[in-house]
Image 1 (cartoon, rainbow, N blue to C red):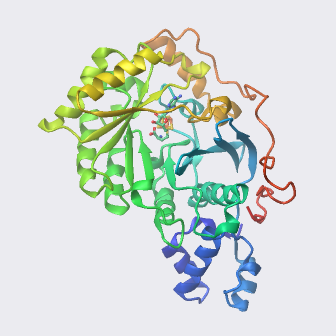
Image 2 (cartoon, protein in one colour):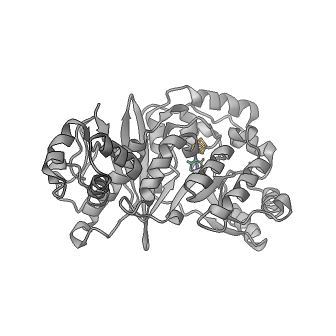
Image 3 (cartoon, protein in one colour):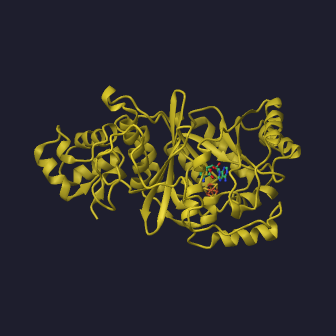
Length: 421
Ligand code: SAH
Ligand code: SF4
């Protein structure tokens, strides 16, 4: 298969160009055409030397991911399911808000961490995404949405996606080699030109890679904590057995001097009767304010649990969520409750792709785990089904409402050259 240029950051593309006997500025030109203008056809890249335009098609291409499904929520949230081959699919979610557009992207097909409350984890791990597959999600979404929202006509600088969060499927820091060039491209002025504080890597706590990220590309960091004690976190986030909370918080403290913000965001998914009691809030306060004496400058983002049958877990009540948030805020820890967006299309971590595939029997393992060690009754646990749970809003790719019907949707035919998004 020919090289996919979506998989290169500037240095990588410059090295590619050099191997073709081309100068570094050609890489800049190519990057700008691809990522700033959404162009995938070399013959349209008018400022490239004609000889290069003719040479490139035999050697490389701009290859998009085929879109398996696209869903649009009543609140404007859009979710895409991309085919990454061999029966694997990953999801990407666009969340429009006042003054910003956030894209949530995936880093792996499945996930090896296997968190107790996560349907991606319940699928097991299939494989790492390549840099090109990570970037292709952003490339497609940005240029598709520009067309959809009619921004193209108003100038190239008007970006639709202002923030990227690595909060889709997978553990980004367990796919570090592919992640790093993707992050660099997001920050590159010739690429997406996002500031470091507008790119967030969310991690379940891969401690050595937090240290690497600090050295290589310190973007905003979100840490999925979910429990205030090792005993409980061992159950919810199995990676905790390898990197316990104290080590994780040490890594956060070491990250802070390089971080684009002066706090670490801690994500905490509230699970009814499991980690949502007053005692847990008090333990969390003691942990974040007391670690190594001075505590960790923190912001806490409480995430209402998005239930799925195999988990055997339930969402905390609104009152409980509010009470938990109030305790933390009263103790001086800035705490927000994540708004649920795209509820009608299950636009939360792993929800759609989780319905498509369970390759490894992880759901059954999870069910057994639920029976044996669940801190809440696991008797309603069900293996994940292979069929779409709700057919009603899973549609084949279709143009969005305001798009002209023909040629507007960038659905690349498998492995083929991508049409314009
Ligand atoms: N693997 C990384 C990033 C992907 S998960 C991580 O764990 O941080 C992104 C966020 O979604 C994490 O905070 C994760 O804990 C949360 N999450 C996973 N499953 C969820 C569910 N069913 N309901 C609510 N949040 C969930
Ligand atoms: Fe993996 Fe994150 Fe899901 Fe845990 S929450 S299983 S780390 S994707």
